[in-house]
Structure formats: structure tokens, C-alpha cells
Amino acid sequence: MKRPSTSSRFWLAGVLLLLQPAPSFADPLPPPQHVQAFDAPNDAGGAIVLVWSPAPYDSPGVKYEIRVSNGSADITSGGKVLAQFAADTHYTKDAKLPWWTRPAKATDHYYVVKSGKGMELKNGDAYAFVVAAVRGEERSEAPAVRAVPGPNWINWNQLNNFFVVLIFGAVVVGSIQQAKRKEIFLRRIPGLDAVDEAIGRATELGKPILYLTGAGDMSEPSTLAAAVILGRVSKRVALYETDLMVPHRDPIVMAVCQEITKQGYLEAGKPDAFKEDSNFFITTDQFSYTAAVDGLMLRKQPAANFFMGSYFAEALLLTETGASTGAIQIAGTDSDHQLPFFVTTCDYTLIGEELYAASAYLSREPVQVGTLRGQDIGKAIVLGVILVGSLLASAGVLFGTDWPSVVLDLFKDLK
Amino acid sequence: MIFLRRQLPLLITFVTGIIFIAQYYVPHPASEELLTTVNKWLQIIGGFALVLGVTSLFHQHAVKIRRREPGWGYSFVLYAGMVGTIVVGLAVNGKESMDGGMTAFGWIYSYTMVPLQGTMFALLAFFIASAAYRSFRARSREAAVLLVAAIIVMMGRVPLGEYLVPVTGDITQWVLNVLNASVRRAILIGISLGAVALSLKIIFGIERSYLGGGRE
Image (cartoon, rainbow over all chains, first blue to last red; front, side, top):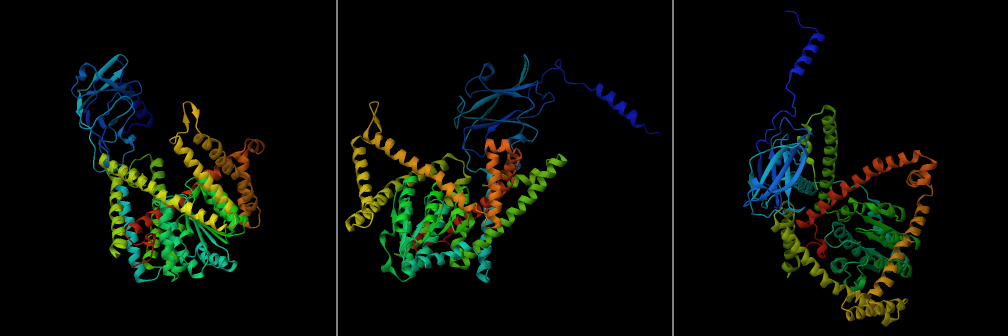
């Protein structure tokens, strides 16, 4: 049998296309199909989700209208118009939900009614909704659906986050076990190696050491890290019998640091050398504190300044004043926005994670070192995920396919 | 006693740590209420701790005045300022304005505190200039790279610079959006993992030096 030529197939396709029934304004407008309303999952309540099937008439010329009324009211005779939008918008796939919590097919319509904007949804009360298709003066309503908003106990959207925490925790525990069995190599961190040098220099010059714990309170990891390093520094300071000044911005941090310093002196076998007022409070105000510490630097001329913890605009004011006094300066911060100032004005800077690594680096305890190895493995995993994710996202765009999102969703919104 | 000094704080840290990890995954209002309550507790503890801080401040400067240490005059100014502000503040019940007019307490804040804070903040401009001068001296290859990058970015960010050398605008955007952003994100990933690891160490009692001591 002779195959039709390419041109004849083209013409045949064109004719068939013309014969297709095109949607027109003369066609009846069927109501939205399979409309469902249910309590929005994974939230604190006060929200209801509406989903319904896509329709052949979904286009910018047709609109969907959503009406709501309190469950006891008759919605057929009224209700409040909540929203009106083009019929080719508001799909489940646009909702930015991970695939494991999508309440409907990706191609279904999806609309979340939330408390606010003149509408309050009370948990436990029933509400009725009507979804209508509107084309010009013509409208077609689906039967009313009812739902009751309520709070949920688990946010399943963050399941991936939970697994990442578990995996990272397992990696850290595994690394600690490994570190107990064999020694783990730690790369040199010049800023921490310089701690002894700075204390030694201050001792030789007979000048004090200034140690700042940053602007944060005890709930910030960087302040905790700064307090932990203070413990090691105070021990060395006690051994060398050098003066230590630790001015504070937070009274709770001051109280904690007093205990840490005292313990450092005890461990060094010099409890008598400990001075209760080596840790002292100045003020919680940012620039008043800065002015006071700058004054201390200029009057007492400390030989070594330590800037650990989190900092804001005061960073440069502090470190530049310290640099002008000729002190050796070591900074360690997770405030990435202040890093350029520290790098510029300090002799050594612990960048980000090095601040957290300080405790392990200085103590060399296997358990502490193991956590560092765990962090490094975590970073390797993150690098791998970034690489694979970039490839998959690029593949998705290049080939116009959705399947990479199955993997990409796993690493979405990780905090 | 060792139970009160060591084990009980570690137990409290472990239990509260686990509860607040779980709290992150629970959207229920009860969970939010728990967080709000604990934050209120923290504020109350912070209020009491402030008394501790002010006591420390008074003690520190009282010693300086008593011993006539160098710079004891500054301590005297601090005492005068603090006591004066407390007295004035108590007299007007802590209000900065009354009957449409400014109180003495408000005057101290508006015409003393605010200008002094502004002055300190303004000093930053001069400090940036001096720090930039020192770091931009091309003494090494790295400093030279920094200098060139800084000149290009400065040109690209200033309207006149971009007008004179239009290409600096695009190069600046590229430096900020590609080089700068990627390095910042790398640092942030390290910081986040470090913070999580430190938090785990504290919750599980691996890191306990913040309690004031080594292992017992």
C-alpha cells in the first residue's frame, strides 16, 4: 500500500484541525467539576483549601468566582465574593507544595481561603463555598461544598527537613565514633594558632587582653561559641597571669561568662588570680557600648583584642580603634556582612564555621573533633546536592519535563 | 550537689532542646503558645538579669572612683548621668512627653542620647576610609586583586563612575551577583552546618564548657 506523501499528510492534518469543535461563546458553560473543600493541612488553622478539576474552557476569557458564607447561612442566595480570577490560573502545581503533600492532581485548580482581608475563618466553625465559572454575563455554579478549618499537629511539608536533621545527626554521631577509634586530621586554622601568640605577647608587654563576646544573647550559637572559646582563653590567661577584660552587652551573657572564666582559672590551678570584675556589664545600647569599649582600648592599651560572636555596624568602629593602638587582633564571626571589615582590620579572622570549630580545634577532644568531621561530610553532601540539583533543574528546563521536581522537592525550603 | 551543678542543667538543656526542635514541626496554636510563653520567660529573666548588669556597672565604676584610678572622672560622669536619668525618669513615670510637651526625660533622650548615638554612627564613614586606605595598598597579589575589584565596583555603583566608564556597571553587577553572592552562600552554608552541629553538641551534652567547666 502506498504511504501518503508528507505534503498530503500536512493537508489532512489541517482539515482535521478545522473540523475540530472549537470552544466558542455559543457553547454552554458547564459548572466546575469535582469541587472539594477541606481544612488546609499542615497549618495552625484558619484556612480552607478548595480544589476542582480543570475544564476545557479554562482560558483568560473565562473566570472562576469563589463565594463563601458561614455554614448556617444559605449560600445559594448570596454569600460573600472572596475572589475572581482567570480560569487558566491557580493550579495545584503553582502552589509550591512538595509532591508528598499535594492535596490534588498537579493539573487541578487549587485555591486557599485564609483568614484576613475582611474574612475571618474561625477554627471549628463550618463554612460553605460555591465555585462558579463566569463568562461575561453567563455564569454556572457548582453545588455548594462545606468544610471546617482546624489546626494540625504536624507540618508534613517539613518532612524533608526533619530527615535532613536526622541524617546530619547520624553523620555527626558516626563521625564521633570514628574519631574515638582513630585520630582525625584537622587543617590548620591560623587564627586559633595565634591565640597563644596573642596571650604570650600581652604577657611579655605586661598589658591586658580584651575579649568581646559580640552583640548576641545566649540564644545565638555564635555567642555560645564565643563563650566556649573564652573558656580556653581564660585558662591560658590564668596560666600566664595576664589581665583579662571582658566587657558585655548582655547581663545574662556576662553571668555565664563569669562562671566560664572562673572555671578556666580553676582548671589552670590559679583560682586566686581570678578577678570577679574581669567580666563586667557596660550597656545594651549598641553605640554607647562601642564608645565605652573604644575608650577602654585607648586608655588601657590592651596588647591583644579578641572579637568573637556576632556583630553589626559597631564592628569596624571597634576593630579600627584596636588596630590604631597596635594590638594584635583576632576576630571570629558568623556575621557575614561584617566579615570584610574584620578581614581588613584584624590580624586573623575566623570566618563563619571556623568560629564553631574553635572549641574542637583548641581542645582536640575526639568527641569534639568528630563533630567537625561530621560538619565536613555534611558540606560534601550539600555540595553534591547542589551539583545534582543544578543538573536536574537544567534538565527539567531543557527537556520541558516535570519529573526532576520529584527529586528537587526533597531539598526544597530546607532551613 | 553535682546533680544540681551538672546533671540537672544538662537534663534541662536536653529536654528543652528536643521540645523546641519538635516545636518547629508543629504548627498547632498550642505549639506557638509554648514558644510565646518561653519568650516571655526569657524577657522576664532578662529584666532581672539587667539588675545584675547594672549592679556590676555600679560596682566597677565605684571602685574606680574610690581608688582614684586614672580616668576616674569618666566614671563620675557615668554615675551622674545614670543617676540623673533614673531620677528624672522616675519623676515623670518614664514618659517622654506629657500634655503635648517634652518632659526632661524625653529631652535627655532626644537631645543627648540620640545625637551621641548619631555621632558614633557617623564616625563609621571616617573609619571606613582609613580601613580602606590600609587594605587597598597593593602590597601583595591578593591586595592588588582587592584594589582592582573595589575600584571597579565603586565606579559601577556611583552614577558618575558608570557615566564615565559604562562597562563598570555590568562588571559590578557580575562581581556582586556571581562572585560575591556565591562566596557568601558558601560561607552561609558552612555557618548553618556549624550552628546545627554546635546546637546538637549542646543539646546532647557533648559541649558543656558553657556551664562553666570541663568534664566532671
